[in-house]
Length: 355
Ligand code: SF4
Image 1 (cartoon, rainbow, N blue to C red):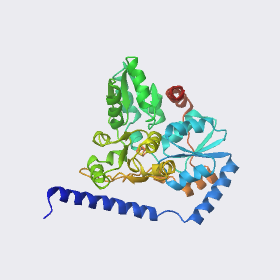
Image 2: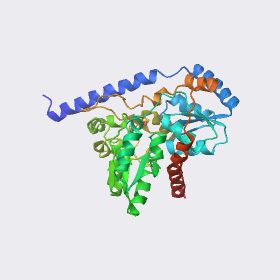
Image 3: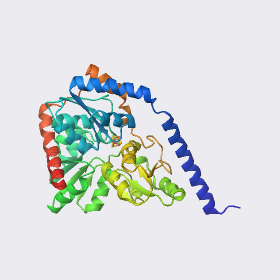
Image 4: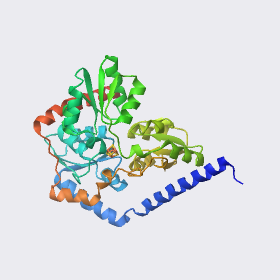
């Protein structure tokens, strides 16, 4: 008769197997190579005709990232997307990501045309921080410095003193804390608590969450570890505190790719959107990457480790918008001027950090 620990181990193996089977089904859906090349060629020509460049986020589907690389564009986190778009000489930026990324591009480059494959792609953090409620909250705490995550609307950014991304948030809050400032943080509660713990800063934290990272569960990852005991666990800090607690490395998308290179383990369990696997596998071609399961008590798998809004960025949509220009981002000029100040502060701070 099996003892309790054996039963638990079998249970963990079956959960992990179900998860791996699902990943196999996802792989089967990849595009036929010839069809993909034909689409790439059409889009390449359309980009040239429009004097346009494609800027894609790590969470987009692999073929969109591959297209950005193949056409001289960029694949990166939202901080680098903002910088690349601002500094690139193209007249038009095609932003493959979610709406706040298109808005950020427009705020930083008002003279450029900003197109997106779809304007429907939003973000649960942006949705969870409506400007009116947020303004009331800020007004109720006038002695606080307002720091918002990049995943917010232009209007929320315009109300902020600082915008940050996950790759520079800890350093910026540390800096503000060293000046003795009290901070309002919005909208991601998990990232906010992580930063608070790291810096010890005095922070009032908004209660937003990312529907992708919120689904990861420590229990699912512990089960996975029982099957791959030598694996390291990489976690994005938008994940719940209990998931961060089982991590070997915690960081932004770019920081996790770096951690994949520096950690000595050959097998990595990765708790962030599975879109990151495209660039991470390029960085560590000989390592095995495993998607962290969104399994365990309380998990609903609404997202299953892939952002439904990022997934709306498709090759057909990119070609379509280049031909029709019908999905263009506009930001009110006055609002954009106000939102640009905290964005510029972040870009200047992170440029100084890089040295
Ligand atoms: S992955 Fe999460 S934070 Fe990123 S765009 Fe999707 S919902 Fe927003």
